[in-house]
Amino acid sequence: MVLSASSNSNSLKLINNSPVNIIPLSNGLRVVHQDMPHSSVVVADVWVDAGVTKEPVGWFGMAHFLEHMIFKGSLNVLPGEFDFVVENNGGFANAATSYDYAHFFLVTASQYVGATLPYLGEILLQAQIPDEEFYLERDVVLEELRASNDDYDWLAFQCLSNLIYPSHPYGRSVLGEEGLLLENTPNQMRCFHKTHYQPERMSVVLVGDIREKDAIALIEDSFGNFGVRSECPPVTFDSEPPMVDIRRKQLFFPRLEQSRLIMGWSGPGIDNLEGAIALDLISMILSGGRTSRLVRQLREEKQLVLDISCDFSLQKDSSLFTISAYLYPQNLNKVEEIIRQEIYNLQTKSMEDKELANCKKSLIHDYIFSTETPEQLAGLYGYYHVLKDAKLALQYPDILMNLTPEQLKCYASQYLCPQYYAACEVHGR
Image 1 (spheres, helix red, strand yellow):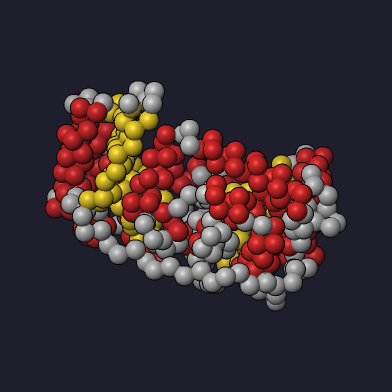
Image 2 (cartoon, helix red, strand yellow):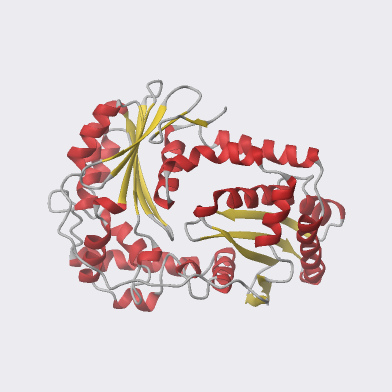
């Protein structure tokens, strides 16, 4: 499947000639719409610029906690009523919170979207946040936070994030801190909601069997009654300075059979999409299958690791590139040195055309497989739009295929230093 931009800057086209239109409404709300007449469903995905990065000092965990409280209803929608209406019409709904966003989506048969979307608009715009429900749901959030402390991989990732981002919100847990959650009040949450759940901070994505005229009318009707504005304490933070050393921390857990090594670097944010895609390609070169560099050398040939993988996470301000290995502790130093050498090789040696072509092909296939359903497309458009612009989602294939070996060497040199990085070691005791 080939993707390309049309001449109209507000409309992008897929090969099936189904346009992706970006429509700003008069109240500041942004609509991303794609009509897919061959589909039998409609996906509504609402993205709010109200993630962890918008939490004032002392309010950490508020964005995720509010995600829970949204489903407690409004004056016109009782707790549980939204879920009942959606499920009674054969659909389902869910939500998620991260550093740059919170998003809420529902999937339903096309004939029922008109009966369900108004409920989602109501609970998002007019969330009541009752005191009693707040304190009851806080116990649920606290239990989720405590359960995460039993997940060693999650703890290791949080440790690494804090090493890379000691000052930026990207270094904190999305779930917050127990002590602060116990201190926060319903009034603080209402203030956070009324500050950030406003039209200029919100995008509504509709993908599926719905015409553009009908989509706009439905959204205008469902998202036209925003609450009275409030103003949270200001949030300020500086960009993290580049690492000039190795930041390392060791964690020890009982009953842990295999050690872990996680190494991490900060990469370009959404404003340098080419650089971000270059690092995504590098992650495939290093660990994208049995013949990739690190997997072949460390797992298949030398058997120094049980498994190894690379991940690249695109974010608004600064993205995250990580290499994770499961290994025996006696192999850790040797594995880390080989990883550093491979990164140095990326910076100094040109790769073979065949290796580059195979890795690009694999990423293109991954991209195609991630754009097969209305739900996947709505998530893709919404994610890029809350970061910057939905149009960027469709530029991925062209940017990827045009990357040259020299560009990869430059981006590897710019963002992946074999001397400066963060490392978290996890061991049993």
